[in-house]
Image 1 (cartoon, one colour):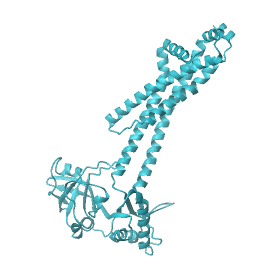
Image 2: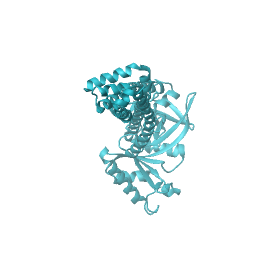
Image 3: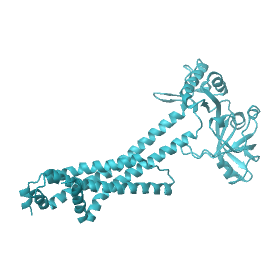
Image 4: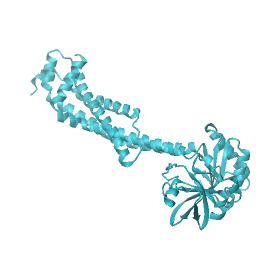
Length: 406
């Protein structure tokens, strides 16, 4: 029999019981739709995380006090493991692969402006901190090195601070805010960055000279961390090695082996986030695949029932010359038609559901070509795998026994 004739017979057989055929395909539809939607959400999450990591800055390296060991994290013990401005001076002098470097002092304070107040994060850093973070000014200017040397009470603020202290759309440049009753002049407003990879609002921040925050707000003589930028993306690892060597040489003797600090790069953060996202996507896709298997079992069940119902039909076809392979192909094609049709509907439903998730929850989704091909592949595999046994059973019937079947 020609394949086209077999396909027509298969479609005609399925049309005789439209509701049963649809209910049989429903498991396949749900499974494929779930796979498409879960992969779309997972891919969208990865894209968002990558964008957020990129928002950290240009070729960023972060240096923290304390060192990771095989037994966990070894935190600093006393002043010997503190980071300070001498470390920054060493990095700038000894690391040619580093373009910018700055200490960072972080605190959280209640900030007031007029009759409004807002609790926010305050970062003290050199003026080149904004170059490291690749952060542009929307209004005003950045503070200067002279402000750093004089510990002047000036600052630049994020969009969230503007909205909560002055009101959206207000020009905050030149305004005065009070931090611990100290007046700070706003010299610039930062462009919007959005959330970071941990879900924190990057625009809810005030950045001021390091010396000002360190001495006048925190009363400390060290830095919470150091931040640096490699001269290019290809030199990130070289910059990491140079910083590690420079700080180890400077601190060896006062801290044992000198490795009382930890260096992390954007690549490290990106790899960790990517691995977490991949694990989540695999988990979600695995759960969705259970629906595909259930759908395949449904197809096998209905095809077995169909073989039983059409035993005499099979006998008649064999009696007039149909071969066993023709009967096998007929029932296998019926299974494939149901699985492919269910797969197509499932792909459309999954794409529509992904868009719905994006609109309702505000989550980013990306329906990729890979997920669509995966849906088709699963549909074909399920149809062949679960349709083979019923088709083989039909093909193995003896014509005389089939004709006698009541």
